[in-house]
Image (cartoon, rainbow, N blue to C red; front, side):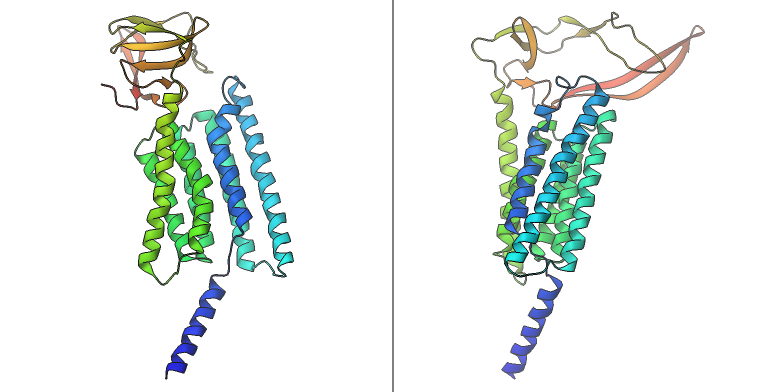
Length: 332
């Protein structure tokens, strides 16, 4: 009786191994983790409004940049995988070959979506998109690999959705997306090799470890980066007290209307604000009262026009815009 039970268990194990035949090589996880995390974390340092002032040129440069790195890594990963399988005298499973093509499609979708968002402003949505696409890719691989990979893929998708729904600052969303690639991919492979699919408690523990290893470093880096922008003693600062009036000038690009750049709007400062200067000019760093220093490029300042109200006053047309200028931080 026991021998029959053991045979049935062996048959079930063989069937399960046949269905879950995808096994990503270590170099694939390290390559995509490093390149994906690096692109998310540092692309803004290379391609930005300072290096490419024209928006169309900047979007095209971003498309070429992502295509070069992601396309090159796809080719390199494919060659290394084929070579590793040849050395081990193994063939690439049919399921893995098809899922790899699906992964390439997800990369193409992310690249083209990032290019399109450059024209309309994606903000933190870009990083949430890449997190969701990574989660989809991991889930697809998990269907033919370890069950833990499926769970991690679903958790990654939820991370992207929650980061967007909760309105995370741009910097935090960027580091979270970078951590899912740079930390999450290699760690998922390491945990999957030590997980047994039939043990639910072990999978839950490994998933908890994975979430902590991804989320905590991202939050820590996002907290430390604004502190790193603190002016050095050689940098001057100027204080703008509450109640001051600062004119704001708008460069407005539109084929329908134009606004003279010399026409300024009176902006009333409601909180004491300190601005950092370099060579006598503001360099983009600021803080409110005794809060931490921030930069205009770190995504905590958010401008949104949410309503347009056309009117007729004494027979003359008027347009009133309603917008919000928010600070995604704790201001005392």
